[in-house]
Image (tube, rainbow, N blue to C red; front, top):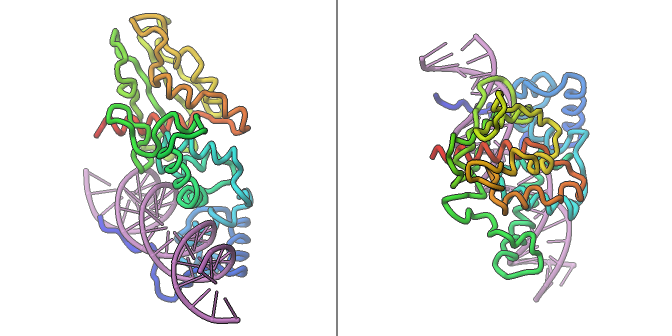
Length: 275
DNA sequence: AACAGTCGCAACCGCAACTTC
DNA sequence: AGAAGTTGCGGTTGCGACTGT
């Protein structure tokens, strides 16, 4: 299908927003709520395209936006998440309350990108960051950094094939993309299935909405089972990755990692498999 | 003080996923 | 089922602020 232009460009304001425009937009959204961006400018009486309004609201006017410098803890988290997710700024921003994807993207491009590059090019003091090469996938076997486009998915199905030793953990991750109206932020369920789990119900649904990732990763399902020759091996992650995610930093920095990030990561892994 | 170069952020652009009809 | 419309995302750009000469 052809793509229609997001808006007629004639007669619309462009460039920096004025205080008056900001006020009109935020007042309107406070009264009417977000959404229907395309028609919003007309209804609100703004000479802007809907896209521009959405961006302005999301990146600047939203009341829950955190202003000010990115803290060291946030920086660490960004680096860590970028290592896993690559340039999926919206997912990374989702783990940093009050920060926007645009802000994090800018911060990465202006600060962290260089910093991480420097650190990886010279042996350094920061062991945590030096554990793995940055940005580029270390190998085609187990890419740390995945593709750029995020999929919306509501469920991740993780399964260990019967009597099959896990030689490539990522091969056991399959993401199901929902066709429903849910969004990434509504991902709620991870279904974990294992042949080695001998209960009648060999799969398990976990409500993961607010579950701390480190808790989940240290649970039996991710630590592996003492059967079928996969003693102590996680189903999805090797030791390095487990340390990466469950190293306890999330508690230290006071930002609870929930499974949305993990689901996205698994989603990415599944996508890589499909290529 | 004036100019050039660099940096950082806000905004724009184009694409793809998703929804609606 | 498929076309048309909408939304969200990541990459890129423009411009003001800052810094060095």
